[in-house]
Amino acid sequence: YDVGRRQIVYVMLPEHAEQLHRAENLYPCRMHLEPWMAYREDRRQKPGVFLLNGPEWRYNRLQLNPKVLSPKAVQKFLPMVDIVARDFSETLKKKVLQNTAFPLMMTLFELARNPSVQQALRQESLAAEPSISADPQRVTTEVPLLRAALKETLRLYPVGAFLERILSSDLVLNNYLIPAGTLVHLCLYSMGRNPAVFLSPEQYNPERWLDSRQSFRHLAFGFGVRQCLGRRLAEVEMLLFLHHVLKSFHVETPHREDVSLSYRFVLMPTSLPLLTF
Ligand code: HEM
Image 1 (cartoon, rainbow, N blue to C red):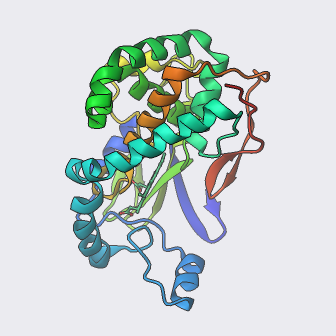
Image 2 (image 1 turned 45 degrees about the vertical axis):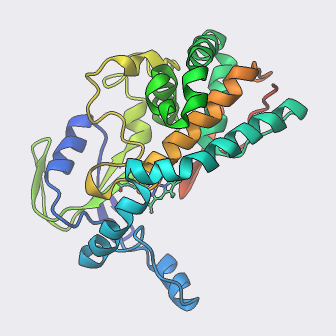
């Protein structure tokens, strides 16, 4: 495709993601976001790793990894996250809420319209509760089906609809030679709904992720050294929220039809599904 004056190659298969990953050098590069950079410069704010590229990106990223992405760093944030997750669940006990956090809300929506999946997750959470309440970190190992449900939500509703890389060297993808410097988009939304990659992709079926042969299929947080910096924190936060909610509530929805989505830099639902607890 030629979008504006920029050529973009679109790919949507796990094996192409794997090839892109293998071709990465020390400085995986995304597009320069000029208006965003100008906005921050104007306010004398630093750009942050999301906007940087090259050696400056790597220098900052290596400083941040131990403070944000490492399991040790996540453990430091956990008590706080657990209190907020419990508090959220307590608030729900008082009123009906429309949650605005997109993957959480879409998980609850899918569980509301798939009651048997919801029930399986509740059983898992109730059984794991003594262990998780003794140490919230255990939420990452004690509720595998819930972990799988988050992957399943992000397959259908990837917050970032596509990943991007500017190639640092020539690459052959699907027999096409793509020159260095070309922008490649890996379309997560299309991959997640492709029946050649996921059997019956329209079905919300967390169990599909329990099969270990799923490499380069769960890419909602990106891949390689440039993957999402907040990944571990986001995962643990979502797991704890859902764990606490599932223990205490049955989630229902009067609207079972698909929610339509629109792209506003991130992929968002056009209207919020109504959920009752
Ligand atoms: C469900 C929640 C989230 C999703 C699905 C998500 C997804 C992503 C994706 C797809 C990327 C690009 C990765 C790549 O190019 O390979 C990214 C980058 C990033 N994310 Fe997240 N993210 C989430 C939550 C968070 C949170 C909570 C934080 C902050 C604590 C965060 C901070 C970042 C940063 C700083 C980058 C840029 C990393 C870099 O360029 O080195 N994200 N995220």
